[in-house]
Structure formats: C-alpha cells, structure tokens
Image 1: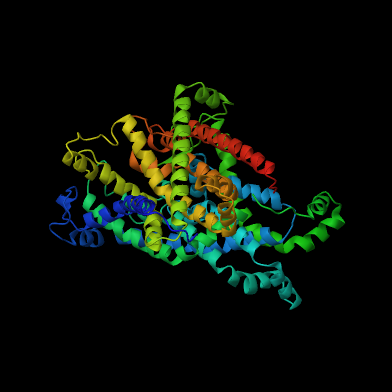
Image 2: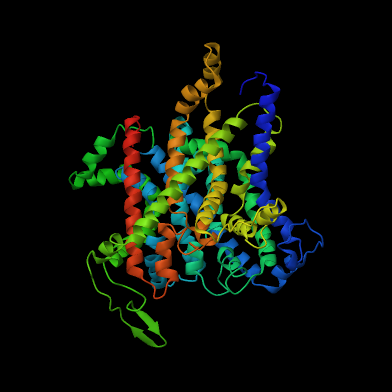
Amino acid sequence: MRDKKRSPLASVGLHTTLIVASVVAVFPPLWLLVTSFKPKNDAFTTAPVTHFTLGNYTHVLAETSFLTWFGNSVVVVGVTTVLGVFLAATTGYAVSRFRFPGMRPLMWLLLITQMFPVAVLIVPLYNLLAGLGLLNQPAGLVVTYLTIAVPFCAWMMKGFFDTIPVEIDESGRVDGLNPFGTFWRLVLPLARPGLAVTGFYTFVTAWAEVAYASAFMTGDQNMTLAGGLQTFVSQYNNDWGSMTAAAVIVAVPAALVFAFAQRHLVAGLTAGTTKG
Amino acid sequence: MTTLAPPKSRDDRAARTAPPGRVRRALSTHWYAWTMVAPVVLVIAVIIGYPLVRGLYLSLTDATEANVARDIGMNHIPATYKFVGLDNYTAVLGDNVFWSRLGWTVVWTVACVGITFTLGLTLANLLNRKLKGRTFYRLALILPWAIPAFISVFTWRLLYNEKHGLLNKLLQGGGIDAIPWLNDPTWAKLSVIAVNVWLGVPFMLVALLGGLQSIPGELYEAAEMDGATAWQRFRHITVPSLRSVSSTVILLSTIWTFNMFPVIFLLTRGGPGDATEILVTYAYRLSFVDSPRNFSESAAWGVLILLLLSAVAVVYRRSLRKQGEVW
C-alpha cells in the first residue's frame, strides 16, 4: 500500500474495473432474492418485483418437506463441523509439534485424500455404509463429510500451530501439564482464528455437498437440503418459485457463518497456504 | 509443502526398525502424538482405505447391477460377477469416449484454473492499495463464496434459461438473437466454465490478497527509488513473493476443478449429449444414472482419475523440491 497519488484516469479505470467485478459477483444472488418475492408465474419475468408476495416462502415452509430437510441438514452439518474442527486441530497439532514415526506418510495421506474422486469411492462407500447399516442415516453422511473436510483442515491447522511459538508449550510442560493439557488449555485458545477458518470450511463443505447426499439419502424423511431442493426443479417438476425461496432460506445460515468467519479468513488462509 | 526439516527423522527411522525393547521406548515417547492422529487415521482408513481397495477390486471384475449381491423381496441373491483382470481398463482406454472426455476435462481444468487465477490475482492487486470503498469491494467480491455452490448453480440455471432467462431477455432488448447457453455444445462448455470461474475467484482472491499483504512495503519503495516501472515491480517483487501461496492454491484448485462434480452435474447433467461431461461426472453416470448400472467400469474410470491426479501431485512435489522446500 503506497501513498503515491494516482492520476485521475487511473483512478477511474481502477474503480470501473472493481465496480464491474462487484456487480458480476453480487448480481446472481441478488436476482435470486428478487425472484423469490415474485408470484410463481412471474419467476422468469425480467421486470423487478411487480406483485410483491411471500407466497413462495409460505408454500415452501408449510406445504413441502423443506423444514424436515432443513433439520436433517442442521444435525448433519452441526455434528460434522464440531467433530471436524476437533479432529483437524488434534491432527494439525501433532503434525506441527511432534516428530513421530509415520508423520510423513500421514502428511502424504492427507494430501492424497484431497484428490480422491467422488466417483471411485461412491459405489464401494455405498456398499460399506449399507453393510454397516448407516445408509439413509445422518451418521453415515457425517463420517463421509469428515473424510472430505478434515484432511484439508488439518493442513490449515498445522500452518496455524506453526505460527504459535513453541515456548508456550514448553512453559506448559514446566508447569506440569501433559501434552494433552498443553494442547487443550494453552495452544488451542491461541489458535482461535484457525478454528474459525476450519469451522467455516467444514460447514460450507458439508452444507453444500450434493453427490454423496443424493446418492446415500432417499425418501423425504432423511433427505438433506442439497438433495431435497433438487426435487423442486427436475424432470417432473418445474417449481422455480419454491426453488428460489428455499434457496434464499438455505443461503442465510451459510452467509451468517461466513460473516462470522470472514474476519479471520485472510489471516487463516495465508497461514494455511504459505506455511502449509 | 512445508519448511520443516525434521532433525530427528533419522532416529525415527531407527526406531521403526529397532528391536522390541526400542519399540516400547518409541511407544512411550510417541504415544501422545499417535493418540492425537489416531482418530483421523482410523476414519480415513475405514472410509477411504476400504472403499479404495474395494473400488480397485471392482474395477478388475465385471460387476454390474445385474450380477451383484442383492435382495429381491425375501430372497437374497448372491453375487455372480467374476474377476476379469485388466479387461475394463483395456476397454476404457481403447474407447474413444475416455480420450474425448479426458481432452475436455483437461481443457476445462486448465481454462478454469487459468482464468480464475488471473482474475483473482488482478483483483487482489487492485484491492491491495489505498482505495475508497475497499471494504465494500472486498465483501462484494467474496460474496459468491458465502453462498452454497448448489444454490449459485441453480441461480445460474435460472439466468441461463434459453426461453425465459434474464441473459437472453437482455440480449433480446439489444436486438440480439437468443443464445442457447446450455443447449448448444460449444455454448454449454463456455457457460459451465464461466460459472466455475465465478465460484472460484473468491477463494483465489482471498488467498492471494493474504499473500500480497505479507510482502513488506519497503521492497516496493526501494524498487521505486531505483526507478523500476510498475510492471517491473510486479514482475520482480510481487510474482516471486507470491510463489509459495500461488503454487499451493494452483495445485489445490487444479485437483478440485478436475473433480468438480456439482457444477457440471447440476448445471447441465453433462449435456447436451455428453458435451460437458468430465471424467468424474461420467464415472458417476456409469454407476448411478445409466441403466443397467455398470459398477466395474465406473470403478475403472475412478482409478484412472486417481492415477492421473497422483501423477500431477508427484510432478508438483518435484518442482517444490527444486525450490528447496522439503517435507
């Protein structure tokens, strides 16, 4: 960041570029919001709202299984986030602080799980979950999501713990804490920004996952949002109005979690990527 | 990917091959580290290890919907598929479908990562200076990240709709004929790339902005004093300082984009025809959409995808080593 004066022309160019980019970024979600207030038959009109209505919202909330799906999603994603952050933190801490046999293979394992295509796992995983009786159960999805989110989060957490001075651990040891106590009482509170970032990442990953959710969950009762919403607009159904309203409701919690975590995002990702 | 050069790794290696007395000692020094990583290793082993081995095995059989074990009513029908060796692989690799899908997947990955990175870097550079409305721009530009991808994709489908979508309505207003955004092979390809870029820029922007902010300002001041032009400063200070962040985000987004299932599946289902089908969506189609479901061929596709990506990661690690980073 330098103080040098920009020429007026450069200033105009800079702001024009940024305004155009911002409009492109904001417009689709904004249009979704606008459309959700239009009556069903106007979903595709280009005019802004002419007949304001909350009909789409009341229809979605009262006459579809939306609330059931929403509840299912909250349970699955909540458990995934809490467990995921905890697991990523312990793993990241161990990898950052201790030199132990098996550490390098573990780092490789964490990187390689990133590249597992859904396609190679999905059929055997389907069979496995069926064998364990976890098909169509929230627990099955939780475990699956953990394997997607935790490897990357553990990498990020390692980057965070690397930035916390080792002296803090040592002082804890001197005071008679065991390694777990040091981790839990001293280091973890200092890594709060990291926890916020990994929490956000896990939440978004699980909240928006489609492939596993639609393959493993069937029936209205067990469906999560990602799978359920697809039934609004499909071969048999063309209910764009309900779709837009449901989408807005689904986006709200994600946006809230995002707003909470975004302060830490820059610091978090830098620690995770430059060090990781 | 890390700067750590573990000083004690030689002792560790000694511990691994040591006689039983040492095993106990290793256990007593390392048990807490092992305990901390155990849950993750366990979960990965069960949920990824087992399916991987099983997927590998399936890819060597002729399993389809018709011959796997299943229950019809009260009757349990045992599996009747058999081991066929590498037949699936020779069939897949000898078939044009695989190569044309691979070609498009590579184009898709390179285009998406290239455009996303360029845009992310440009915008990060624009934002990394004193500027009115900086916070507003930053929030606006990362908004697409805050919304679950499947919802954004649905929104884009709404905008792209050929008869009623907003994009075509706008073109109509300008007297231009409607564009079949998702119904023409070439347009569909451009459309899916555009959506994926739209989704991916915020991540790049945030990561690169973080990288830019960690470059000391004095470097630029000194360069300016020496009469370096803006381009020279970018070329010789910004680019090298961002190398570590960029290499990580490029590798990650290459992997993610190569396997980007939701965007293509939800936007076009791989269509029209199979114009936008990438390897992952095609493998998914083989085992979950097509009838009869072809589990073995799908698994073979999956294994091939994994091999391709592993090759990418190995090459990447080599290049990191050359830069002196070891782990």
